[in-house]
Image 1 (cartoon, rainbow, N blue to C red):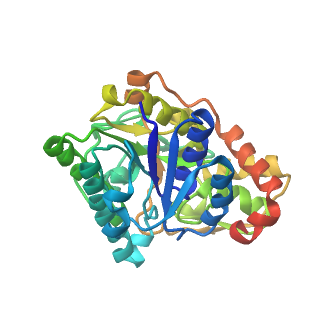
Image 2 (image 1 turned 120 degrees about the horizontal axis):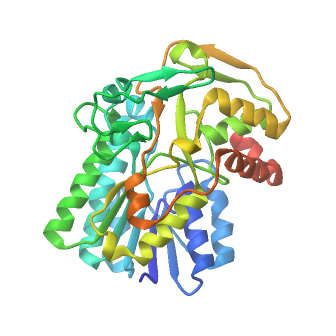
Length: 355
């Protein structure tokens, strides 16, 4: 059982959603959010925290002194902090390395010294880019699909499983997260720290401040709502690239389960995502956004893909579903509808950030 929780990256999309959800479900728990407020829009969460009695600490995981163990009396640390952009690693490697790698070292040292459990949010981006690009695909009218016959272990029509190879380059972002996973395993063995790692695919929903390089489904809906142009980039510029998406509330129900059953799941490193039935191509996303908003916008085509991009990623979450009984319950249409309702309700606040 957890009753004192520290959420790192706590004013970000996942961290703030998790803090608010846990505090509402478990009002007796102490929930502390720690964040450097670097991401635009994260400051909007501070009044929400205050309303619910969630403590906020302004600090940076890159600074060991900000994570001084004498200041933290918690039994569980949830790490949602990261520079989550693949593109950022190609333009500003220092910030990615300092935040995602040095940050993890500082977090593990805190966990070791205060004997806290660690729930770590990793990423599907730990899987190598060239190997993901070599997955056999079939092209249909609106999307790419994974072919049933594959030569690479860990890939099937259901998507990418944990057995998928880790040999190859994966972007600086992906590398820092994989290195973090390995450090966590070493700290588990050396110091007996309990830890769970969730390798998350695309997570989305209300309160995500979507950008080109992170939060694509919010970006897409917001562009339709505020009538801004978009581009299909790469793979012929037809918008057939595919991602699965997981509604933030479905992730929250999994994390709540993991917190309640931590000892049973200690050591788990499992893929978490919406899966094949909750996947969309950009073209299919456009059609849904048009139906939901009643607006149609200009979408340009650029044939050349961006550095580090892949044509398809679908999470095969069979293992975590079999192990916990958890499964996503919100489909992509509901998820986009929820994002639309949020933008509609808070249009004035969100317009400067999302448009």
